[in-house]
Length: 149
Image (cartoon, helix red, strand yellow):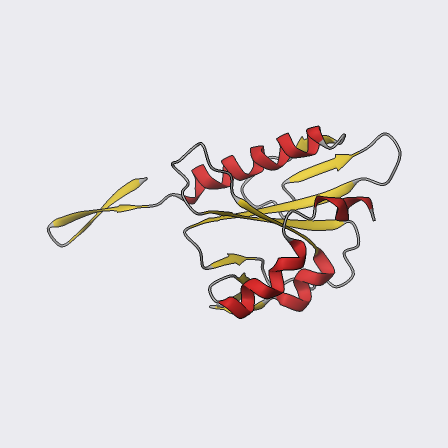
């Protein structure tokens, strides 16, 4: 967490770096267990976090989005409708500091993310902040098998 001053009070702000890195490594570990050979991409302005392939088959590209406490995952404004080998893995850590819990996981093909995204400031996001939005996500919960299709 980083600190900043607001008036006379020091406020603690959650850093997204820690949860983002934890999420990427969580997905890498799962991919290894599923028989993939994943590679983490580096850089702050990247659109793909992980490249992965099996010995037989086309490589897949994965964008990992991590939140803690709920709300929404920012997915940008790019048209994702034709991105066949791109997947979003959306992670929701309810209690990030509790290492005995795992995040909720949603594996969503990019064309489906395109259909789900909604406006958010000057960008777009996939929301999980109410029951209707969580219902739209439910078919993708723990849907690691979608990489095989």
